[in-house]
Amino acid sequence: MASLRLLAISGSERSGSLNRRLLAAAVQSAQAHGAQVDTLDLRSLALPLYDGDLEKSAGVPEGARRLRDALLAADGVLLATPEYNGFPTPLLINGFDWLSRLQAEGAVPAGLAATAGKPLGIVSASPGLLGGLRSLNYTRQYLSMTFAMMPVPQQFALSRAQEAFDEAGALK
Image: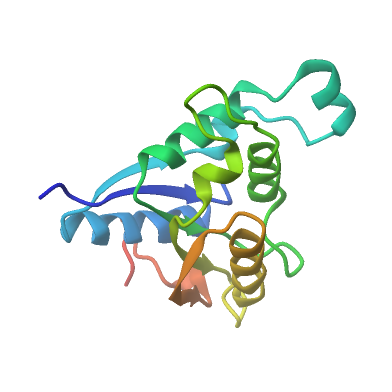
């Protein structure tokens, strides 16, 4: 039997990101349970801020196709996102906004079809007491309603995340 293939995405790619640390712990756990995990850096997609005029003049950037292809190759998605003023990060939203603009290309499905029915696990880390819970709720709503992803019922919000990791980066 083939192992489960997950795509791990962080909504924060900054140096020292608490969410990248939490995602790394989740990836390690998934691998320990036999999953194959590919990690995608949203920043590496080099997606400009979504703009309809830019789309009209230059088309959908190649980075959106890379996101679509990574999603198509995965059985499910593991996503960590911090909370920026109560919402998911612009990096995360912008990536999925561009993805939604991709039309089917021959046998390759449209961006929205690449996410339809895809299981989604979401976690968040924050120095605050809610651990990014508000962002998780909006992320769940955005990705399930707009992209037809299937969030698992459980989600995890790590509060006081700056105190949660040891010197090696592992959860205490």
